[in-house]
Length: 136
Length: 480
Image (tube, rainbow over all chains, first blue to last red; front, top):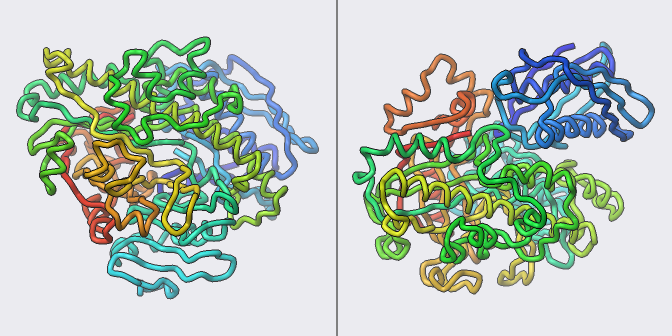
């Protein structure tokens, strides 16, 4: 499981590889939160169940990330650990973390949105690969 | 001809045309010099101009202003008008930060008057205006009926609540209120995400900058707008914060379904749209209007906070300070306008500015002779410009001009480039005092990241779209 960022002039792209779709979703979430803040100090204090529905894997991944971003920006949640189950037509996940605390979670970038621009989820020989552009 | 781009034709000294091919409904037009064109060769912004030309009901051209660069869906710097009957509206042609915009505020003071207290002013402003990722809490969180009033009334709500004066409203595009806003079509999520953020700057390329009027090109107009050489001014660049981001987010789902429903084929999903006559489009317009109004309240509240900080720090009354709004413009918006030869159209400006020429009825009387002021922020180290719209823009660009310098290097590239630099010291050596919540945001926004705004505004002037009135040089900048 790895992720890297790629250049997109005004925005940030993340590229994720993982052996399975489940780990791909978990790693993409981790990659997005790494853009938002330094996750080193995030404690596992809360666990939330998150369900997102959809059929197309690319759209499902985008919706999953958008749901997490909403919880960060509106509800002040920060997560560093994800356990993902992919079921037919939905993703069911447990996201672990805590309430965001500026003194322990130094912020990096304000992400406005998870875009559909060149959104990609592909099955490859060794597993899965995704590309997502985040609007900053 | 630009090497590697054989189908691009230079049709005027500052204008390139992309011929209509494949599924394009109209040609593309890019305002640029060969050098500016060259700088965008590596990215996909030119393809994005082509893609926009595929959207139903587009009239005349898919355009890009000289600060254009790679966006998502539409290029940043994109302008496109759609027939009000046959055309579409595309939230991606407006952007997540609905009515991100910028305003310029003059003062009755010269830079020399405030220089001894400049550091104190910047520190006090930095403390008073929340900035940075997820910034909130500039004013008590609006409760009860207030959130709905904010998004339906726009800047007037702020003035009525003590943030600014009625005279400000004449100096905001459309009086600071987008008509037809309907909070009933906005999700609870948008309110939850945005309401704590009224009066906050945010992050990214948003800023609050103190400047000096460095050079005046058109004295008569500058006099009318209250600007003279050596004058101390400030500008605010921000948008609709989490409220607008969520309005856009919510709309894209609806628009993707609408494309299937109405059989619209898309070259990029981020261009999803709906026919202007459809319910989907009407609901989006009513929600976008709410976000636009939120943004105006946001900039209006920040302006009031800075006025108070200046008055307090300098020991002046607000009257003596004379901090009058020069103008406030939108960068990311769609508006219904009448244009010669095409009738009623929905003009999308994505990282572009409306710049109506003299005499336009939408302008407050004060600006009917000068043309609409627009304000083009440069980067933190170089100049920004005050422009006015000209008749040429009304004929050629649906009364639109550029919106900034235009990004040249990606955020990641800038962070790599600036590793090991003492950014704050380097900027101070250039005469700009910078305060920011994050080092990364300063690295990403260093002057090297941008094209020279001077080159960009020159293209617009030579193309007859907008005239330079004054050049402004930054002296202090607050970033997220």
